[in-house]
Image 1 (cartoon, rainbow, N blue to C red):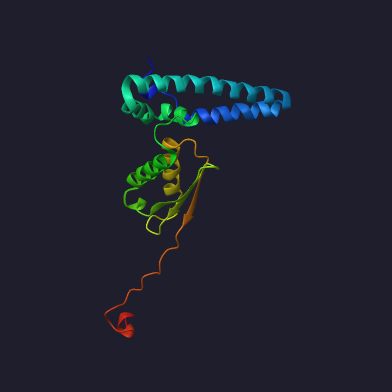
Image 2: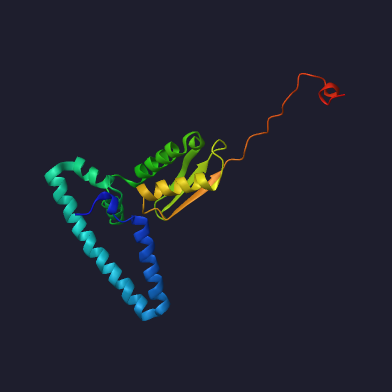
Length: 180
């Protein structure tokens, strides 16, 4: 039996699959086509099996149990890959942004969903002036989206410009403030 800590990382597995398909493509058109066909048939096979398993779980344990399955990162990725996830994509993207905000604390207060493109699998996120546009914030958002909505292909960001700079007004006349 595999422990949760031993479970493979879905994103790592997806990268490995892409790498193998890339190697097949580099080997020439024939092997690439055969590799893609093999992946397609295996996906159909596993998808049909998952669909049957979700149906059995739903009948035996109800929707709550199916939602618990969808909460596991690896199972969630498989369910999403086969359009079987019990939580719709917009809701999962919203949860992902909530997760990113929690992870970032006060730096995450300006994170907001601009739009979700279901046809392209792109999420557009606005970063408010309070959270800055740093790579750390972007990485946390990308990671949270990848965990909860693995079918999202691209996370794009727009950053609000910073507000006007504050000007400090001194209490003394300028000639005294300069040390005259």
